[in-house]
Length: 121
Image 1 (cartoon, rainbow, N blue to C red):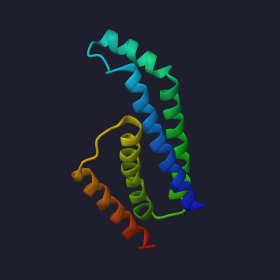
Image 2 (cartoon, rainbow, N blue to C red):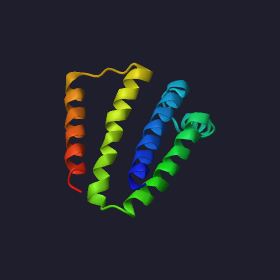
Image 3 (cartoon, rainbow, N blue to C red):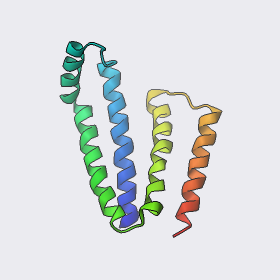
Image 4 (tube, rainbow, N blue to C red):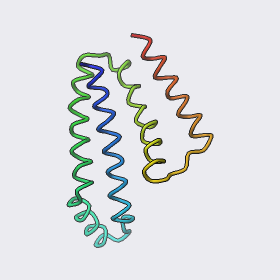
């Protein structure tokens, strides 16, 4: 059940980040002026994808609290680095973002690190 909580944390975080990106793609860049920025933030706070992203961040927080109440933080926390892996993969698939060799090597390093930590318990 504890590993399921870590999985839910990662899943909700990744999907939430993808929702935020989708919303900003439709809303555009945040304006530089205070007046336009205020209008932008109001529109963003009413956007379904922003609301959904915040909701998933809340669910991720609850599942994370459950996980760290049962595991050592130094063991559980490195699993959250898998967020980088999945966000990169799904950003490439959904938003056609580029993945270069440097990013691939970084992702492989993260996966190796998580594997090694997972073997330490």
